[in-house]
Length: 230
Picture: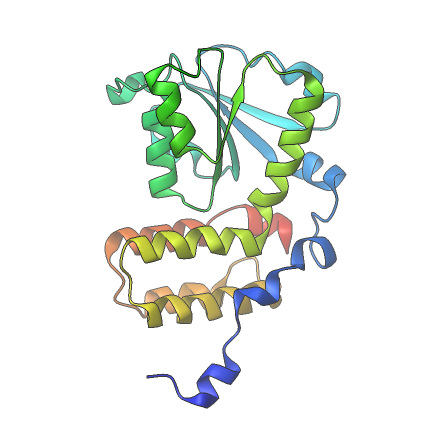
């Protein structure tokens, strides 16, 4: 059980609430556009890409991915719903990929998009699984608004831990373990340590289940911290 002294020394995620805008290397939309590569999972060319690149965005077309690990290094992911997921025998196409990405990498932001009707079964499922859904035919101004909004959330260390903490709680990890991991995470960010060494040591010395351990290790190896605080 935590003592009062331990509680007073505990570093809470609330301390990172303004980190992105006040202390990070990604404090502006311009910096985020220039430094964050957005992954695109689509079996066809991503039509808005050429125009959006003129506004400074960077994209990496991944096609129809063969492994969920193909998405590991990207913090913001766009996923088409139709024509992908074939390597997973997925009857729900992109919805299956979104579900697996969110399960394996809860720190990622995944946006679903499609030209299909929102009444379509796989579209409905994707809307429930993804962080947002975008109709494929929206204009460039709407793409810019949404990409700036979600890229901000995707790289904010405060928001990242909220997503991780929620996933750990869903996995029924002991609350005391989650609190300790949060302390180590916050200290790593505040120390501007891109290797997240305090968090890494906490995981190494823990008895976390394999899936929870993989989630934290995926966070530690994420490239975002090298850009954000490196």
